[in-house]
Image (tube, rainbow, N blue to C red; front, side, top):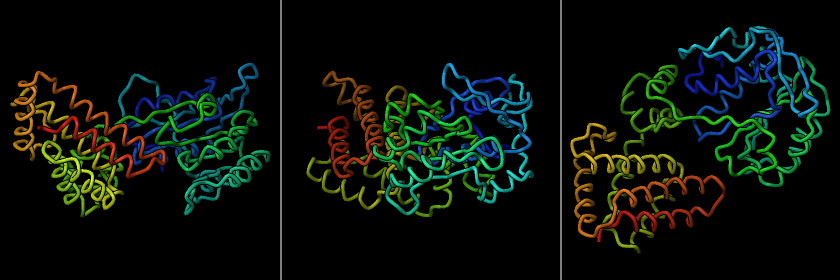
Length: 376
């Protein structure tokens, strides 16, 4: 993928560019952090191609005092950022896609680039790390100055991370690690201490629309963006998923049960609901957090034009008024309760990414949501 096609993430692009500028010291390992669908792999692949491109004459330097690897090169070598206006001096160029290294890379046959993920397995097995990284890293690059390892850290358990650690601690000067994760806290502190962290931010609506148009999607853009929650992967899923409207309707209907449903029915029907829609867990969480945001907006100002799910405005407004009536009676603060519910969804989202018990996680979430959203 050309850097020209990478939309958004301006600050991240600037940092990547700076890491390739002449004389800029950089660690040998980069960690890309963001939810599924945020573009971690696309950015990492483009960064890898930029480093390997033979027309970007990057040279290796070593800071022996710090033990870091420096990537340096001519002044016109950097990470290309064509889609944002800035006072930053972008004299860089993207990978040429024409040299031998780029052609190998785009064909998936570059001998100095290793993409390591779990494939059809549940995790990346430790033996693969020992063979494909620890042993392989001892061999110098065949084409250029670098060997690059792109690894999905979500596919590594603690044993696998420990196997990788020695290579991160004492890498040869030509090794560059590009690591990806959806949850930084799931990585060993010893690994985190050896990487430069790059966090992906939510995309602007205009950026998501541009990404959709790149994929030849032009219909219902406003509707799609409304529920994408700043995530291009969500947007693409919504655009091609005929079941989205059905999932959205069911998720909204379930949310509006929380004020009145009893505990037993909630746990029984709720766990069954999530089992049936497990692949849509993140989307359901996004929809519910969007409803909580809209509730807060309308409880502050019933005439606000900032409601995102505008087609549900009257339904949200009725619930907002019911909460106001309830909390005004008892003296309880509605903001705290709604924020508690919002935070509980965030915690459940994180728990779902660390192999926690799915039923246990959902059960705990439902109880917390009921405690904060229920109207006696």
